[in-house]
Length: 216
Image (tube, rainbow, N blue to C red; front, side, top):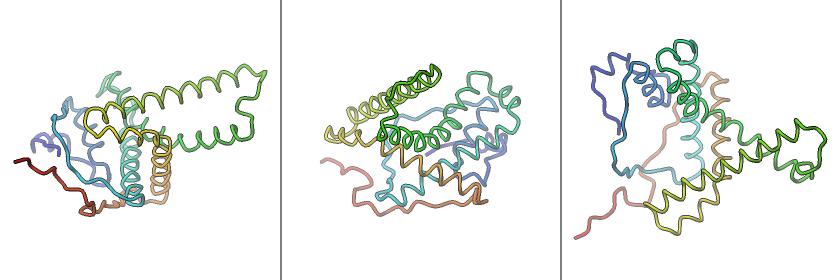
């Protein structure tokens, strides 16, 4: 749960009420005014969606907010660069715009790799050096991406979760594909003038306790 001083919120102009991922917009506003945000080392017991449909709707909302935040704050890119500086500007592109862009690209690239793999053209020899270079780049990029995702996921399981959950890490390719589907759904909603439509997540449906039982 984020905490802010009211005077600070007023100084940055609050947040975009039409942005369904208000934390992305507000975080960027604070950064542009020179403020820094920090994470409190604590545990959250917030309930996550337990079925696919509400999960897709939640990810659609997040992705839509990232896209809108990118579009709004990048209307004057030089001003954004001047406010943030080169390194923070790059960080914003990677963590907000980059997340949405990679989510949109993943299903397309996965389908292309699957198609070329099934048809045998993926590993077919080619005399075009540019084509070979691009293929090598994409393969290495996917290997690094999957390895990084598995490594970070394993760190979370190792530190906080039962060890039996490590098998769920093998579903990361499918998980990212579903995130990509949510991103394309978000893009469609933006194109359909549903930018500010908020699909709320229903809570109170999980059988798991909201907080762990107290010992003693």
